[in-house]
Length: 589
Image 1: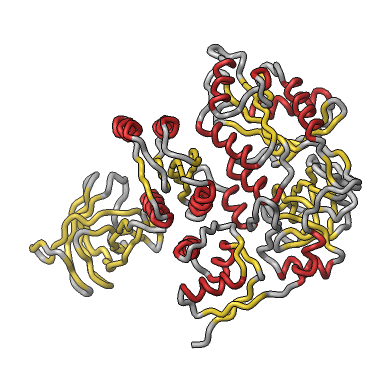
Image 2: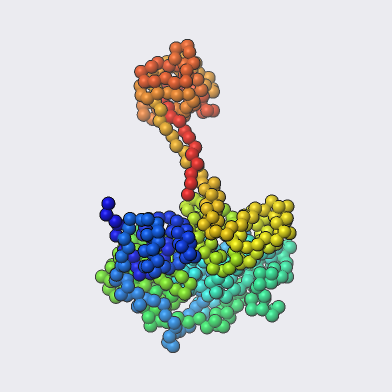
């Protein structure tokens, strides 16, 4: 058999290579680690490394370097250092917080403040980004669907979120999801403003929140730190004005700017099909000025912008950086998280979209494909999650473990990282594991005798590993256990009912002829009358003549007792009974 030739870029991410090779990304990561390369799913490896790994895996594949139009135009769209002509732009703000701490209520209060001040607020609650005007200045809010979505957008190309407002309920305090939000904001390198919400509620204790913040290494301004804290009530709107003023103040201090004399680029925030208008995309502009009739490319699709609108549907002639816009004219729906950029003409736009279906842009923080973004952002609420806390010896190991764990997620089960960090397993980890019902995984870290005793006393599970793929295998087993079992039905045989002997509310005794296959005890049967499904019964007794038997075969007459399974159904002469066995099978990732 001849070997398969696969074209790849001179430098490719581990995830993209796995996709090209049609291999599980975990298998590729494991092989790299066996060869001494601590790579993550988003790590870029060169062509030579990719060749070596293919040989190590024994694949009948030949890699060749791809030369494409994307390489020719990459320089034009690579993010640049701001020029001297960069202009001031609005801040982009993400609001995050623990569930039930009032994030949505706070956003609603901010929206209503804007609507009261200006009747046409330009705010739609069903999109992921919107803009308000406050004190004659614009503020863009990014309403991300979750912490992981925010992390993906910020870390892998948005470069648009400047400030994170972390909402903490004054009567509840810092919770695991709050800690997650803090960690994401720190990792993203953005400014943090803390909004202590629900200060009007009984039991509100802002002082306790400030103390808890200091325990997370967030020192507030009044204690000599740099973290702005605003006490608010989304219910009474107390403190909302001050919060918006602080956002503008932080924005001024950061001196937020963007270039406008460059090709327009940004991020697809949301997309859907609108009746009568076709594919609709909401986008957030990063640089340049976007105008109607411009050709833009987003992932595997492109558009000549037919309509450029504000997010409330008002037509505009141009849109500047940090502005959310609504775009029509795409050939098909762009994916959430796709970067967009302009093209010179339709030919270039078409070639870019076709020739590079999984294009990724490289930034200081790494790269990620649109499919990875979609997977993280479009997780359903009903997904089964496995809570865990990760501690590792060094930052590089921690990053490798975390990125590798992300690759285990599916549409049904997912890893939920409650907390992670560098260093030994400590008392805070144990408290967090107890409150969140998480398992602690340690990678090359120590556990003190007192911590081990506390863990045993509080029934906290701690698992320690020195080999990363052994840790991954353990997590994979836990995720496999969360998978819903597969229900398999195996057909057995068919009976045509010839006689009804006795009927009561729970059971029917009847007789019939086996016309296909064989009937085996025990089994289930579906009742069909004139090809219409009537119901389902259970075979509880089977007779050939007067003798109880375990099976009857084709062309034999038999008697049978059928349980109605608490259903109000009947069986008539000439009904068709299709017998089957239903099995519940465990599944694996």
